[in-house]
Each structure stands twice: as structure tokens, then as C-alpha cells.
Length: 185
Image (cartoon, rainbow, N blue to C red):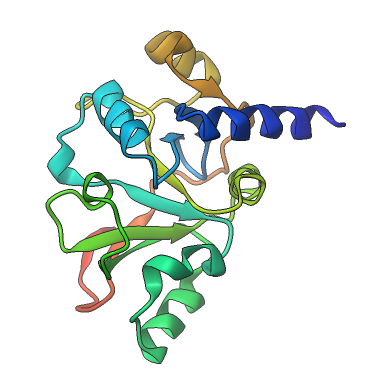
């Protein structure tokens, strides 16, 4: 087994135990967990000291992994999503009732994205579905840009999946699927 598959196996085992993982994304380091584990979602929010009303993002290796959260989207909405992915485009989709309350926060929408980062894709594929993705930082602090930043901020509270950032200078654009409004460019 290669070092990468050992690392991914270790991370998936940790996720299945309800752990929080830290991993590089396109622009910054992210924190993630199983989106269906309420206890893990609560720990992640507590670890970040994040307002639970804000909600979190789901990140996936491909659009198929997001299908349970996309049920109810029409053909034109699906085409809009597919045309922008993979890549740095987060979409707010109306919650079809599948999202856990801590995942969507106080919103009637859920933020979803298909990554083009090879390590994120490999992690989601090894896990067998999407993961929560939120910037690796405490609320109000800049996001982590390296594994050393992760260790300094979170220590042993997270399982580290080390690798390079994806080369983007800014986090993903956030757009509302229904209105088309850009909330973060």
C-alpha cells in the first residue's frame, strides 16, 4: 500500500469514528467530517468556535456524490451545476430535507461544491461520499495555509491529511442556484 493510501485509509477510519480531519483544498486548508454524524458536526463547530447558524459546505469528488442533496433540482439547475464543476464554485441549493440542521445552519439552502483538488477527490472517494468542508481556522482568524498552521491551531484535535494546496489564491465563489446571485466572488 502506498503512503497516500495509508493516509487516506487512516483518515477514513477516523471519519467513521466521528473524528475531524484537516486537509488541503484549492486555496486554503479545510476541516471536515461525516455530514451525517450530528456529534461530529457539533464538535467541528465547537472546534472552530463557529456560529452554528452559519452552516457549512459539502464538498464532493463528483456530482453523483451530492445526489441525495440534489433531489428535486430541475434539469436547468443541474446543468448549471455540472457546467461549473469541478472547480472553485460553491452553490447554495434549496435544502430538500436531506441536510442535517447543523449542516445548513439557519438557512433554507445548503452549500455544495465539487472539488478539482486531487487529494480532496481521493479523500471523498475513499470515504464513499461528500464531506463537510469549512476553512481550517478559529472564527475570526485567518485560515490555515499549511500543515504546520493546522498543528499549531488544532494540535491533536484533528486527523491530518497532508498535501499541497491547489494553487488558487481565493476561496470558492458562492452563488445562489435559484436566483443566480453571487454572494462571494
